[in-house]
Image 1 (cartoon, helix red, strand yellow):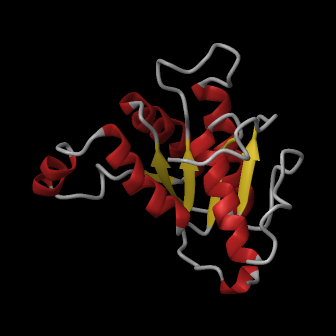
Image 2 (cartoon, helix red, strand yellow):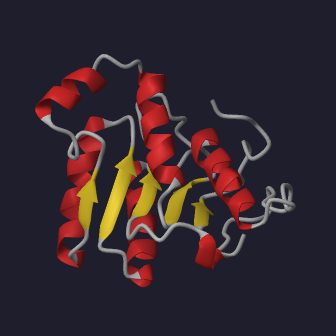
Image 3 (cartoon, one colour):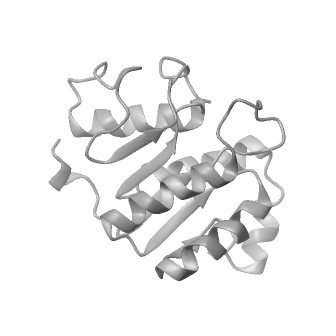
Length: 162
């Protein structure tokens, strides 16, 4: 499948992995956010869907994106109060599945290669481009036409999430 047949949704998906259990050697929120905004700005995206398990990251990214005229959305900001109530009944992993599906359909995806969630999402999206090419998005790759992983070394590229 070529890039032209991948969904043109008008938004960029971003996964920022900066929860309290992240090892010290992983990139921190600011580094991940700056990398994502750089891609959004150079690709001229005006809308970002943010997936993160850290609630404060949404407001922080909003503040960073405002001068760039980029709007940040999340599952919480797009739902009615009643729907947020239903969502809050989900487990952490079930909420991550909601994010996974929205990110899967984003026009461009950006995430950290340190995260198994981001790495596997990028691989899954890569297979959309060419279903016969299941292995070329390897530990040495960081980008294709529709996804970008930053901050290698991508230790989780061959693992399955969830």
